[in-house]
Length: 258
Image (cartoon, rainbow, N blue to C red; front, top):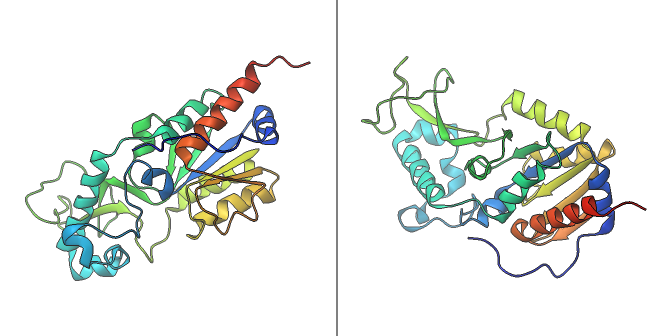
């Protein structure tokens, strides 16, 4: 599901100029870019059977402890939705930007792997992935397990297996956040794309970038708490804004300098 139409504005020349001169580009994506592919945001109403459940009450260690079968089934339902989705023009534009920025650092709060399916080479997953499973006791990533039980059992220790995602009340993976913070600090231009800027510590990354001299550009259909602090807030869906940004950069790179 891709947004249709054209942007009602042009990409500011100042953004294109900074991008053209930049060596290090960092992008942070949130649920908004996946929503353009038809993946419901985490807090949107659930369908059918799941409409009576509050997602925030299913995505926690306490919920898993109370009813591991229910939580596992809910995540299986979510994977089914993601399986039917496809990367959109925003995802693909980020892949194309790697032609200009081979060391582009892509940080995502999403767990749907749509960036990887689009072709992004190195993605820092702050909140884990729906497509990995780990032991709830030892934390090891487990593959090749039997699916005869719901949830499956760890073949090494007998504990329940769980999705390798960050639940409410759990810390982000330390190594992933450290790499994300370092990339933010070193960036010349930082793109905040489709994120509400409400979930910390991920929401601190654009501010780290700006404090260290990066041009901070927000891309979002709606204003967020970050909008007033960004150098530029481009109001629109990622599937329109990012391709326009890419086209503007291509045109600038092809134009001879006087």
